Length: 120
Image: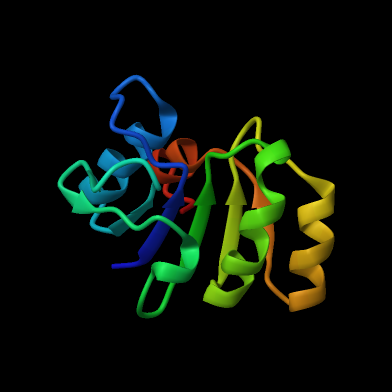
């Protein structure tokens, strides 16, 4: 079971971040929602910032657009995840440079597709 931080998690079942929360649980992962406006997502207690996540983090999956990522990057780097997934619409070369500097691998991919195809 991986610990997966879902940045931009939502309670709206139509949003991809919510679908990811559900699918991660379905595939046996611990999904940790980062969502400052809510106290929980899909029954999991939410934290307001990445810095509030405790314990080891295997993957960070991003559902926040590039324009809103800059203030989140140091929190992500501080988690020292094994990888960061930039879901469609979140791609950000500026963030890639910061992750490269920290030695954190990243990929542009869809978390839902990775799970469904056994590539997660």
